[in-house]
Amino acid sequence: MTQRRLAALIGSPVAHSLSPVIHQAAFDAADVEWNYTAFDVAAGRGADAIAAMRVLGIAGLSVTMPHKHDVADAVDRLDPAAAALRSVNTVSWVGDELVGSSTDGAGFIAALAEDGVEVGGAGVAIIGAGGAARSLIDALGRSGARSIRVINRTVDRAASACVLAAVAEVGTAADIDAADLVVNASSVGMGISPSDARAIDLPCDPDRLRPSQIVVDLVYHPQHTTWLVAAERAGARTIDGLGMLIHQAALQQLAWLGALPDVGVMRSAAEDVLARRSRRPDGPGR
Image 1 (cartoon, rainbow, N blue to C red):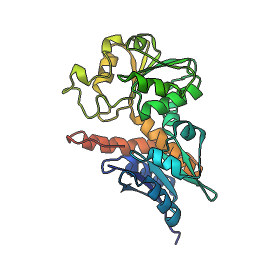
Image 2 (cartoon, helix red, strand yellow):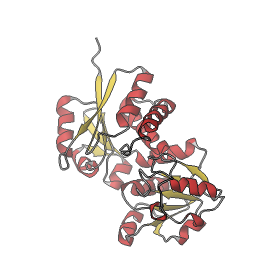
Image 3 (cartoon, helix red, strand yellow):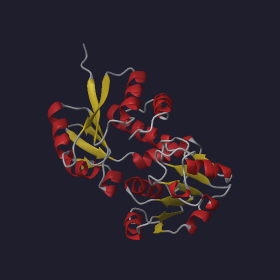
C-alpha cells in the first residue's frame, strides 16, 4: 500500500480555517495520496514547525499568522515574492531544500484573471497596509499596474508598503474616485452581515464609487459584504474575496504536486462550509 503524504496548515488560531476543506477536496478530486490537516502552533514556534517538517518528512506546509515572517527566516531559500515581502505562506520541497513562497499576491492576480480582469495598465486604490495589502502591492507592481495608491489610517505604514512597487504611493480617500480597481485589503466588514452594518463598518464612503470601477473586497465572511452591496448600488462591478483564497491555495498545490488542481472543486467545498457557517455568529478563519 502506498503511504499517503501529509500537508498541513500551521498558525494560531486555525480551528475555523477553510484550508483543510479546500485542500482535501482538491486532493480527493485529483485522486492523489495526500492528506491535509491543521496544526495550532503557538506564536514564536514557526521555526520549530519547519524543523519538524524536516524530521517528519511533511510534504508541504501552508503558513498563516503569526508565523509568516519566522518561517521566512527558517527555510533554505525564498522565491522572489517571499524574499521581497520577507513573508512565507507556502513551504515546499525542491530536492533536499525547503523553499518558502508567497502565493497570496499571485493568487489575487489569478482570481481577477478568472473574472476577466486585466491589471496591466490599471490604476489601483488599495485600502489597508497590512500583510494582505503588501502582497497585493508586490503582485500588482510585478503585473504592470499603472499606479497604486495605498490608503491607510497610519501614513507611515502605508509608506513602508509602497516600497514594494515603484508605481506605489501613499494615497488619500480622494484617490478612490479616480481608480479603475478599488480593493479593500483591510479586515473592515469581516463577520458583519449587511443587515447589521453601520457606516463605521465600511472601508470607504461608497459615494466615492462609480459604475466604471471594479471593486474587490478581500473579506469573504460574509461572502457578499455590505461594501460590495453598496458598490453594486453605485453601479460598480464587484468581486468577493473567496477567489483569492482559492487561487492562492491552488498555487500552493502547484508547488507541492507540480500541477494545478480543480479550482471549481475547491470553491464548491469552501462555499458549502461558508453557507453552513453563515447561520452561526462565529465565522471562518484563513
